Amino acid sequence: MTSDPVKFLLVDDAEENLVALEALLRRDGLELLKARSGAEALELLLVHEVALAFLDVQMPEMDGFELAELMRGAARTKHVPIIFVTAGARSPQRIFKGYETGAVDFLFKPIEPMVLKGKADVFFELYRQRKELANALRLNEMFVGILGHDLRNPLGAMILGAQLLEQQLSEEKHLRTVHRITTAGQRMQDMIEQLLDLTRARLAGGLGFVRSRKRLDVAQLVQRTADELRGAHPERDVAVEVSGDCSTLGDGDRLLQLFSNLIANAIHHGTAGTAIKVRVSGDARDVAVAVHNQGVIPAELIPTIFDPFRSGHGPTKSRGLGLGLFISQQIAVAHGGSIKVESSAAEGTTFVARIPRASAGARPQPAGGKQRKVLIVDDDPDIRESLKEAFEEEAYEVATAANGQEALDLVTGGELRPDVVILDLVLPVVDGARVYQALQADAATARIPVIVSTSTPGRAPAGVVVVPKPLKLERLLDAVAALWRR
Image (tube, rainbow, N blue to C red; front, top):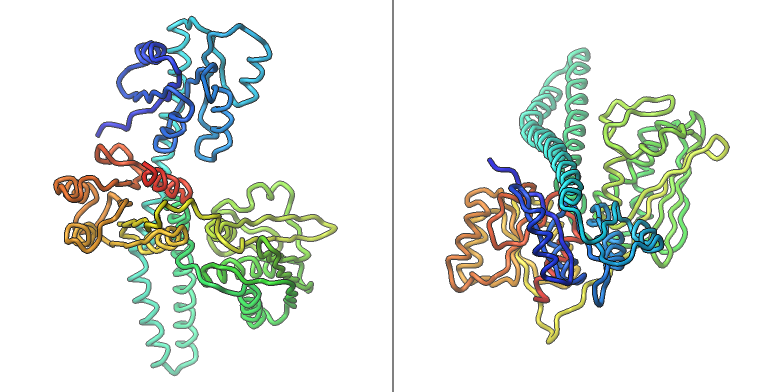
């Protein structure tokens, strides 16, 4: 299997300069993307992931410095290495400005071919190494996700059998044994769910962490969580204070999981005998939930406190996988929010989760009042429903399909004529590549734009827009909006 080509971006307003750069850099395994302006370069960066960008400094409308600043300001391009190329004078001020905008090098024309190729080769190899490492990690995460998914059914059968035995047995020692089996099985189920959440976070960009968005009261969810944990830990005082309007849109089950993780963490790792204080407050922008205890997190652990597979801190070590805070952070991020922590011996520890009142502003609506139609084809129900919710919030009309055949039946049968299809490649019944081929073979559907979401962009059919996994919702929304504008 051939590896995906490494993409380099060349930006110069003079066609002859682009041709010269292409001639110097072209080789096997390298795809060169050419742009004659900053605006054209930004459009290419919306679709392609590049390993390096060569930017001409002197261009009309948007010069290289301005383009670099825009790239550094966007999450998906801020880490792209930039080499400026210019025919201007060797002014120290210009060079300093280039490095201030994020350049890794500054070359002056005429360019020495061996120097240019040498510098490009360094980034060529670094990018390949990063991709190989990322692919290895992704395979491991996929294995964890598949294993966790396949373990749920036999484990569920084991727990059900133990519960049946518990109803039929009468001897106390037998009941204790069966109860321990049931409890251990339920703990294993919790761990498997956490592993599946980890895989969802890494491969699906956290989309599965928000299955629905409904109007809810955060204060009520926090109070419910506190009541449940008080029952499980009667020796600990959990006080809840509420102020302001605490209503928002969100996934109630996931937010309960978030608040339960934070309050349980405060109970387990706080100083014994001290109270847990939970403050819920709402303002015009968001709803904040602050969970405070008298425990202290060592300063060296703070930077990695939300990393997965971290062991517990404090007097009580966690018996879980060390995923609770990581999953809590992912739930907050999936709602457009955040979690921060502060800890000191004098003040104790406070985790603050912020959930925005509403999602980011919708993108501009099409002229003439025509509603945009999107078909989402993905076999993962969490991703499918999360994307549906996200696009409906942007005023799209959304249809979904769980497999390739279902998608073809909707479109080729005339029941649906979408403006854009978002297509997963790995699908049951009929895979994504065959779905695309079938759409292209029919004159009535051949012009429907298709966006493929995949962790292996090199397998995507020619002619589609590729949005690599792990999915980034904003990037996907922007890609669909760009296709609509065209």
